[in-house]
Image 1 (cartoon, rainbow, N blue to C red):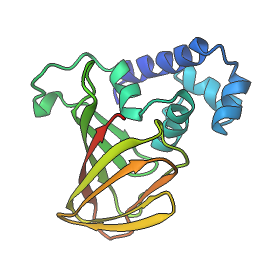
Image 2 (image 1 turned 60 degrees about the vertical axis):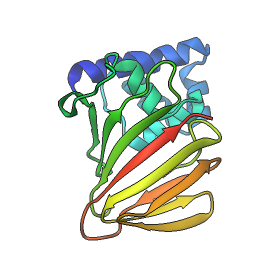
Image 3 (image 1 turned 180 degrees about the horizontal axis):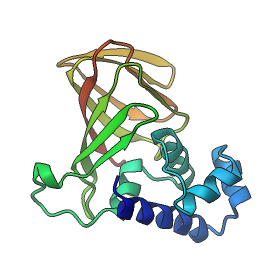
Image 4 (image 1 turned 135 degrees about the vertical axis):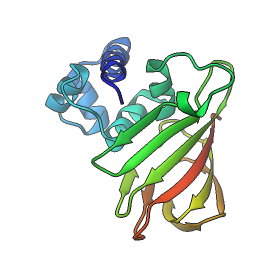
Length: 186
């Protein structure tokens, strides 16, 4: 994520908290993230991980992709590959390409995800209850836990589900996994 995009993300996170009239302590209670980490994040002193953004988005009741779309420039109808925003979480080994970014008036979006070997990302709560996901693995294999059910999803497989509880993406294979995720708002 570029410096300008990170600065806009920090400002948007601060604005979301202000819109709810929450103190940093209240947000810390909602997310389980320390007050000091939240403060540094809102000042743009640190970059968020996917898991941290997941916690914040759950507290604010929005998918991560919507949050990122709010800080990215308005996408055109045709989204050339070179214009698709890419975000990397170097801590967890997750790369996210917004193939078809969220857009006003549209309920769906398409994301390409790449998880490096050993990547393990847990989301304790969904950003929006009932969010519809269609996950299609293009290469490699992924262990995806939805609620309490563990799914092994291999190349060519598509897992369809609604997200009501926790989820976890794990790549325990020696090669990266590449997948497409279609997200549809309820």
